[in-house]
Image (cartoon, rainbow, N blue to C red; front, side):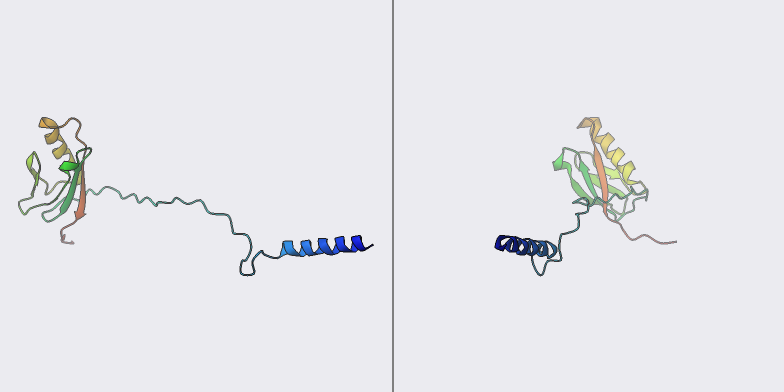
Length: 128
């Protein structure tokens, strides 16, 4: 009879242990992790806003790090770009400036120039 009593006590002790969390401060099993990307990607639509004197542009050419430059549009509406010289930027969109620079680079220097113009800083604009 003693072995039976010992077995009952042992089993009842195990049953109680299963219901308690392993650590007193731990509330129990953690909820399943949510699947979220590690990096949040922000997609900003391309602006059709016309560039003005005073806008600061970052201009990059794919696979040509020596051509990366920041230029502020001068009062005469132009920027100076390496190899090709002055480029009329005021009154144009980013895409138009990209095309102009790309075409001029392709004319004499590069094949399939991929130019990106990013506005780093807008000049003050008058609100209507």
